[in-house]
Structure formats: C-alpha cells, structure tokens
Image 1: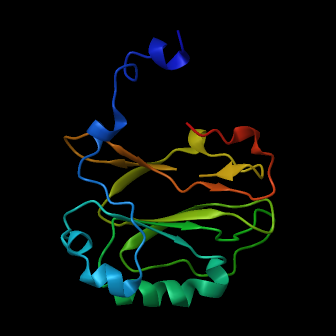
Image 2: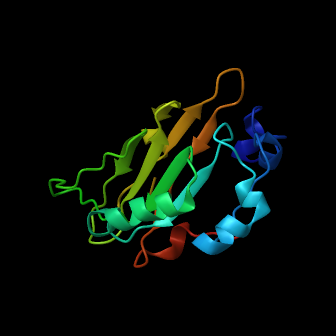
Length: 170
C-alpha cells in the first residue's frame, strides 16, 4: 500500500476530473493567440493562468507589461519562472502591477526564482510547505474559490545544474 492509498482523500481521485474547466496548456505566439478561438473564448470571469519564462524580471518587466497589453486579456494568475530575484540581495525592482498582488520565491543561485501575480479579486493562501528553494526546484499558492474546490497553483523551476535525482517521468 502506498502513502497515497492511505490518504482517503487522494486514493481514488482523478486530478483531471477535479479541474473546474477544460484545460489548455498550449504555447502561443501573440498572433496565434489572437486568432485561436479556444484562447479567445475565456472571459474575465473564467479562471485563467499564464506562464512566462521572464529570464530576469528586473531586465524584462517592461517586455512583460507590453506582452500583456498585446494579449489584451486579464489572467487570474500570471506565473513567472527565472525571475532571478536573489535571496541574498535587496530587491530594487518595483513588482507592482495594477490589479495584482505579487508573491515570489527567491533563488539562492544566479538563475531561478519564481513569482506569481495573483488577481486582486482572488483570495489566496501562500503555501510555504510546498516550496523548496535549495537549488533543486522552487514554488505555491492556493486560490480560495467560494463554494467550490480550491485551486493550488505553482510555478516550478528546476535548476539546470541540479542532480536529476528528483526528476521522475511516468
């Protein structure tokens, strides 16, 4: 019997059946995004997530803001990987984005770091028990949805030089 079998809440759960809406994990250019009916079908009331490997939020925050303007959609969650916000340095960047709260996991190395912009109208809990930042991987917030199941959202970044002992593919 595995650990998951002992947990009655998880033993017979199909994670895909617990998602509140259909998922779309496709990658889009700005042009393809605007011409895709599925990507355009969500409204401001639909839970939506956007991920971007920013490769330094300090160097590329203006590009992120321009990309979001070009996409012309309001996402519930905006996840960023490789923010390069260092654990041992003071942050000099203003991470304010109108309509969002910013939470981040700083990195201990030159690469990495993750961040999540959470829309102001969403209630959330920062889930530090799911976070790890010892040059292995980083991440997580739980979005509270009234009268429904909560949604756990995270940005996970595995540092390229780490030992692959944590990587398992099924």
